[in-house]
Length: 163
Image: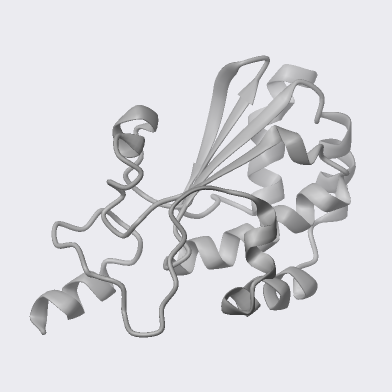
């Protein structure tokens, strides 16, 4: 019981003890398409997506900075931070008409060890982790939650490449 409480309070940070899937919980693992969030199991996605209002000034700047950018997202469907940030992220991407084929999603289990090697390969300790690359080189990350807003942090990361 104590380990369950400790792991719950730990949010989406790396946990020493792996908690198995809870009853009636569905966890995605591995490469996933965005359409995975259309499942009734992920009703939280549509709710959060529809109410999020990105800052328009950032949207206008991001729309001009989307060329040669790719984004890899390591997330957990079980993670409250992922559930908060992913709908916001896709709202932003839809608003700037970001190419869907330039966004990759990898879902991890609670230990971040499945898919095997994913945490080490991408240096993942917290989820969600948004890895932003420009012309194939990593230029920044947003880890767990943005410093300002998701769109604001994306502008901060991308601005040096486009100004």
